[in-house]
Length: 309
Ligand SMILES: Nc1ncnc2c1ncn2[C@@H]1O[C@H](COP(=O)(O)OP(=O)(O)O)[C@@H](O)[C@H]1O
Ligand SMILES: [Mg+2]
Image (cartoon, rainbow, N blue to C red):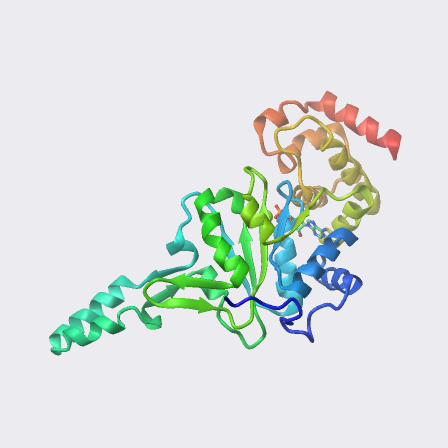
């Protein structure tokens, strides 16, 4: 077993040294993290543990990994999970065509039996994200993003367990490949199904909520700086109000940012019910949700937020 000691640094000089520094680091990547998220990110880095981020779509889970890679100057290795994802897609594959060529060449030169032993060497291995993440890099270990793990089938989680606890992969034909220094692992889940206990236990866990009004205002100011102050307040208030409605899919931060860009492109200076209904497809992505919001409904919501503002 190659258990890392909690004090083993990943790359001590460049990792944030406390929660404030972590929050500041994320901020330099234009990511606004609350103190709770900054704490769990700091601890995951310090303790060398995978971080499991769960929350609705569009709340900023994937972005945490991207910003960490960017701000720490590490490579981002992304494994996008999907149904049917298997070892060959996620970890490694043997390069059969290349093996065949090697066999043919060896046969032709009369060295057929000698080649058999070398057919399962590194040069015949095709690296996929999980194996690639174990390789050493001059700039320090990469950020391994295992995105939307809830989309993968449950057996795939079991396969991840060895990787997440020991940062190693067993390849039957080759042996065990171990990371000299463990990667920074971020796993996200939109919670379309529950993640197994065994995997949760290996990770530090954080549930990411939709941001509150003030935070979302600041996010929009960062991500859509061209939009005027007044309309920014209205649109954030509207999105926050919309999230309280009975919807099949509530709009995330991503949708709020898109809407801000759209309103800017349309030169909107004040939200009118018609503007809202005309652009609703940027916030709501299901017809059942959209039909609930005719102009009357939009007018009511606008009235409600103006009364509050
Ligand atoms: N706290 C935040 N600070 C800055 N940008 C954010 C924040 N939360 C979400 N975003 C933005 O919202 C968008 C969606 O985030 P993403 O990470 O893709 O969501 P998720 O992975 O949870 O579906 C990204 O463009 C991201 O920049
Ligand atoms: Mg995501």
